[in-house]
Length: 419
Image (cartoon, rainbow, N blue to C red; front, side):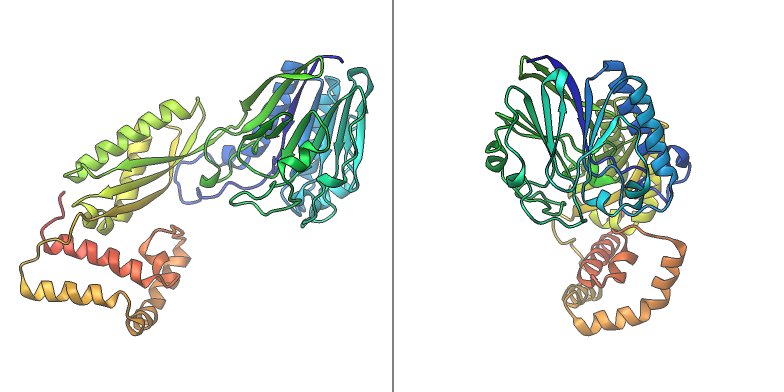
């Protein structure tokens, strides 16, 4: 068999918006808005630089029923660059593509081969490669498509392209469900999967690979994103590596506050954690971080009381670490080590009453009625922080809201503001 190399990508979601950044002042919105295109540009450039023999896209090139044809025209121009480099592209439609009018109406360049909605095999004769795949006909495919794929072509390196969550993956609908054993049973040499947005290698004989999505779009898609580069020699995969191609990176930064005695200590720990994470994980890219403050600390009440102001302060800390480091959200998972010693009898009685009220349905109903005008005003102002007290009230999470309020009040009554 011939030796060759190819690139396997999936879940590109062209022109899909990035979430969680609308409130951030100073953000380069043009870069954010074009992040998925910029990542795709990186993919095309990498393919050309490496002179790969072909490219596989295992579904979800687009992001649903886009009405703007500029998305499709952009893709056609990108394919033209690959055509000029004599790189063919084999494209499978995933669940998001099935809902796309663009995919149905746009004529593709001649170097783009699409898989039909029934099992299809494309041959690359001079490489002795057979590529098998089946596009989604609808956005919701619940059948095991893998069992209907054809048998391997003799004396060829056989690749299966499939959009699937295998037997299930958290955060992803179980479309085209199948097992690794189902894939092995087809007798192929490599399975190029899509749909799951995390890079993963589920097997090596044969290789069963998710490249992950090309560009993270929100905090649940943190870490390096890109495609998989595969080298084959004499019919055997000899090298496989994940190539980061994203242009903006998401990160969760955990800050342990259990040893902090003052709010300045919390700021110091946060700055150090942000600097460390940015230095190690940004790889020269702009980074958007969610800061999670956790641990048992006597500062829990004070942190809850000033959560809005503290978010602004952490944004300033991030700007001091790097000009291209932004904060998506500050999440508080702190709790007090023990109930504060309140010696004042009236205050102590009040705190006990507040603790008892956390499960009182009548009080919750009264609070909802009294706070309705305030919550309406907050929505108009655009406060969308899921962890804010206003958001808790809006979704009726009165127990959590009263617990936070009680923690903050307890700190104040106990003199634990700890500036």
